[in-house]
Image (cartoon, rainbow, N blue to C red; front, side, top):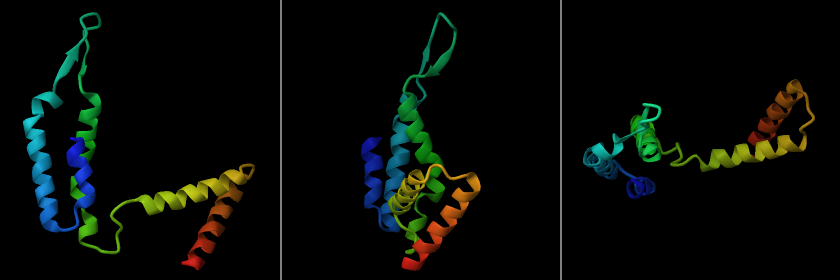
Length: 121
């Protein structure tokens, strides 16, 4: 699963996208029994998925598939969210410097922060 997910960053056209989706779906079909494997506790009588984290990763990717490759149709959409995460990280850092602000003043701070950041762009 990890090998397949790591290949996402190399997708830059529709053909690579289709090959990647096929590889992902083939992997899910091949490992269907592994993903659905459950463990059982005789003491409590409860079941749970044995490979919870792999199953969770698979589920997240499967649910994201319809919107995962929107950036291929619109070149203005970035391939990753690194830029926005960095932006909000700086905003959060600046807010932490002024952590004594009331809620209304925090809102004003964010408005002014966004205003001045947009001036620079």
